[in-house]
Image (cartoon, rainbow, N blue to C red; front, side, top):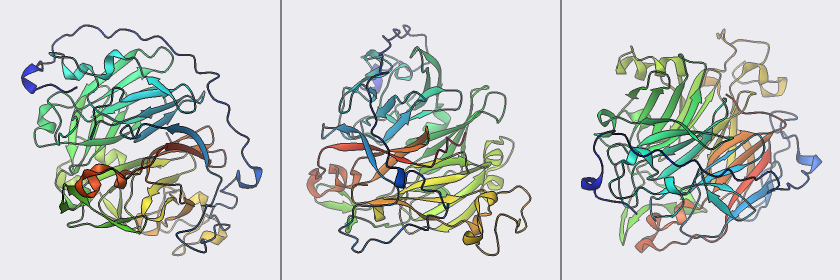
Length: 445
């Protein structure tokens, strides 16, 4: 339930401490099936030479590595956007409140088709008069960092709301062992005043004293948070590189993809969405486009740079043939992207050392530098290639790498009411969480 701003404490005043949750033992909740050995190493060779175009784009099963369903969701209005997996294979799933007021917005799976509130039930909904910085308004993404902390990204905007409540947009970290809250970073009004819709977050803990969080904002910006200093910066705001294409029309299962308000048709206007960190760069894309970009993490996190200098540091990788949703990266320098227009996940290499004699591009291979000195493939030489394709991949949203697998959520987003005439949802149950082998790779950072 959401409450008027008049009921919200407008200052970051002290509030009652959050009750420590009971830790749920999920050690025996999952028994994963044996992974088929014939498809367990998709990066042998690394250029996926075994990938074959299906005979019919409307009648195909799986091209690429085997897809394993690890969780199913049977509530039509409770669709997942984010998934994070711990080293002991606990599966954390978030359910946004963009369209409906779910009782749980962040959860952990305690069975194949059941979840429980995480870190506890009391934090899931803000109570009347409660400071919204201390509770969940709308969790859009869940991420585990390299220090094994779990983070909830809260947009701060509830059902039917476009902009965040004051003090509602935030990222909160929790201890994976005790579920106790560690820290809370609330976006200041100086950032949210002009409208924000934060979507996803990645962390580089080797930058600055305590690391930096990088956030995408669907209303058109990238946001950085210095985790030690608790300082915030909004970058690239209202620039073309983070903005949707004007009058963009994508395709989903062969049907044009629009936004609807009753019988009034409009266009999807979602800006910067997917994000991944690899080899010192941040890779990102506006969702309502087919454009892909990169920028140095150090440049983006440098608070002394002017906005114009940051914009000049952005490299355009190119058009990629699909709008792009969730991103992730592995420790081999590969970046994975949800490419729903092809019911697929694609990837690209960022490390020159990953190239082979069969993957020479523009004269670049593992023995050459092509003018580079840091071993990173330049933006102009990046090649996006297929990883896995299946009719079951119905809008691959946020994803992560853990224990040698790529894990991702599917939620049939274009079939939700917002994107259907008269708001009639056409999604079918269940929503699914998958995993697929990445040949033993681990998370990038």
